[in-house]
Image (cartoon, rainbow, N blue to C red; front, side, top):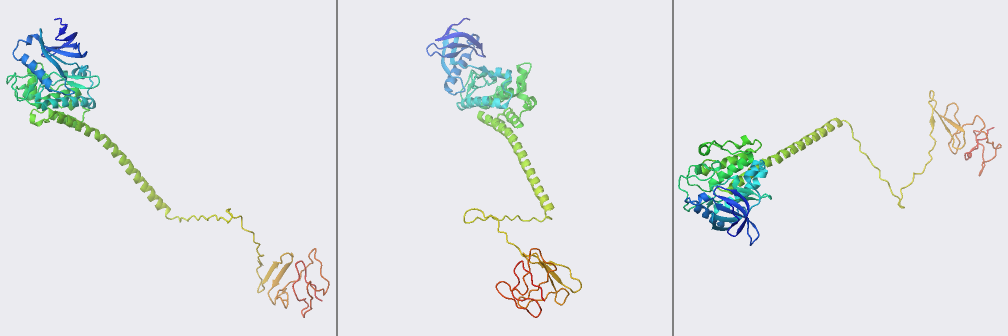
Length: 431
């Protein structure tokens, strides 16, 4: 069928087919924006209930104002049947993304699931159950924004629907056990379906497959889903537990809201990531403890082997500063007196010899009463020995010539008394 215009919208010819209708891409000539136009399948227009569901979808979308739910612009009828003009979303379906293997990493899955959970939580609070959560009903924009769409078989809680009890609506691979049985369902059925979507994103497999619809429905009702860790061994056990809880057959054992399911996944991911830094700090603490132990051992060995060696303190003498601000020069040299030379005496004799300063004359003093002893002068008590030879350059004084500054007087011993001769003089020879 060649359609150029639906209502006021001009069609571009792009289209794809859904469960209940065909979707065209058009343009609003007044506002100049792209729109998605959904037209009910012609073969369903005459069947009871389908037109009512179509109109109900329009009313549900009109109630939901959320950034992750496609918005409705207009509902009407054309020659082909009822239609809905909705927000056009540029992107690809999550089903195509899963087929390309884009979302096997929890870090890539969680941002998408957070947005879908937020949209579902908003719908559930409005009393609306989607009933057909699956990857083909989620569009991912190039920016990473996820959009939930197709509320065609959605149910409004507390409102009598067109679906009779015992009739199952939905896609068998994503339907909950109670939905497969045709029982009354609530928002927890959507949580089950979303858990299967997460399972598929992380593994590229659905929990239950079968040769036909009845085989799949039977597994959904009676079989336990295979552990997700079997399909993706790199997943932390905590994330596997969160998904396993959402896939419980009993709705009361599942998370009680879509956002609770997301928080469980986020908390599980946070715990799994927190184990890596904890191990890192454990290694760091162990290294610090080992370094400390080595330091203690080194100090102990140093004390043990160095205890026998006396440690002498280092005394640093201060550098005095004179009143001029400069350090003092070297100390003055003080002449020292000649040291007497002691010779070993023979028998009882004691002999001391020394050289008189400035004279070069050797003087020898012997103990009194011994051979070679000089007689002591009456005034000074100093004993002198006669030189054995005349020193060079010394001229003897004439006999009985007085010393400078006084006279000499012979004494009984024949030696001249008075002051000792000056340096360079010798005593006169006695008669």
